[in-house]
Length: 296
Image (tube, rainbow, N blue to C red; front, side, top):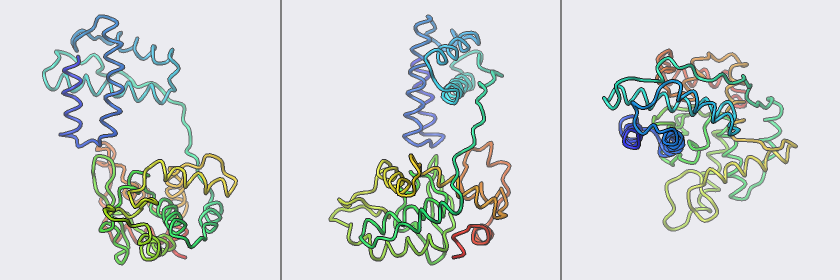
């Protein structure tokens, strides 16, 4: 089983192009699964049957894992056994047709347009870090980026004159994210007036830098967003809430759902197969027409 897990992780890393963070999460889940199987005397993929996978699922529930976490881990297990069968590491797939656990539907947290306006317009400082923080929040909401996409953004990927960012998303897949209105102005001002003051010898080409001149971390972005939320009276404001708000407000503004999916970069192949190709011009036109701050 250890050999099968190792080969599967290599497949994810090399052939699927999964990010190091994704591979690490899979490795953690599969170590737990292999440990459970070893305790049951199942040391190879062919020692596993459907009842044993069901017992593992029940064990996760007994250990207090949330329904979404149980579903994720069972999905990882299904992927492992599917790989084992395909690569000849097992004679059968005991997880074939195994249903994923049901997860209660939970709507994402979304700010109203008025709340976003107050949040962003309240950041009016002129110090380099103030300009950086304003630009960060404008870009998170104005472009719907994930935190990792924001921190990974380099200077040559911010094509402000053309009105787009080249974003590297999950699985190192690149996409175009339109940027306009207050977001492009805030980012341009930070790049011109704020970032030069943060640069130090050896600084990377990252757009967003910390006070020491290094690439801003994901944790720092979370802290900046949380502080901004507290100023508005919103506790535990999360960067992903701005991404959810971005998509919701575009949809409410009349943007086509397929355009929103394209901009968000939902890269899973089973989802992208149903997408209609949208060219850059149409992406930007839809974005400017629908986003509440792109027209300001």
